[in-house]
Length: 267
Image 1: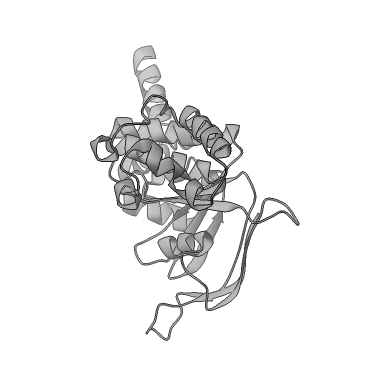
Image 2: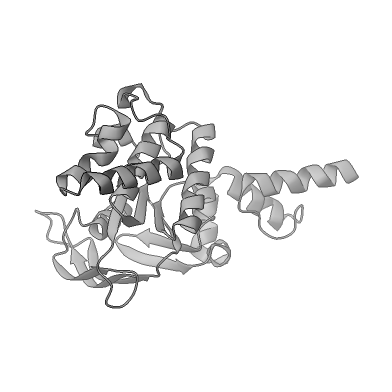
């Protein structure tokens, strides 16, 4: 479980804190989307959970159950190449493990496992600068898995990828979430991606303005306002729903497309 209790945080030399008495609990193995306007504190919240930033006051604890040792947090940004430290795939994945001075047998076992989980088997010797953006993001993911990360923060992790790569990585993350029982926190501007999560948090000026399911968000005043501002497929689906063209809400492109094609063919 991830727990933030009475957290205050400010960037010096600002006197006014970004977060004031922030309280948040994230259940283990859940998928949470964090959305909101620029400057609302989304990335700052992710870095506080990761431990890259320290709160001015308050408590942040990580663990999947009461009394369990704090779990490692993996953080994937938009440009994985900036975080790479190895020349080739294998070097990058095992770098952190070697720094921990783990036995060679353990390192080899972890490397074998994460290469299989991420579909990178046979690419151990590939130079990281020759990889596509999607492949680099898989390497970054594998490196975090090798370190034992149970919580993954995806901070606009798909912003530099083309659509096929986005679909591939998102499918991989979903499979790992289910198979490896990971907690996934996605910071995103893409409303369609956010609505695939179990829970949506909407931040505004450092405060949680909304906390609930995707369906609840879409029916809330802040959700309706944000959808109209964001545009895209979700806004289109909402507009069609209000006009009575489609029943209910469609949160993704495929389901809306399937419904429209089915009804066109039957008319």
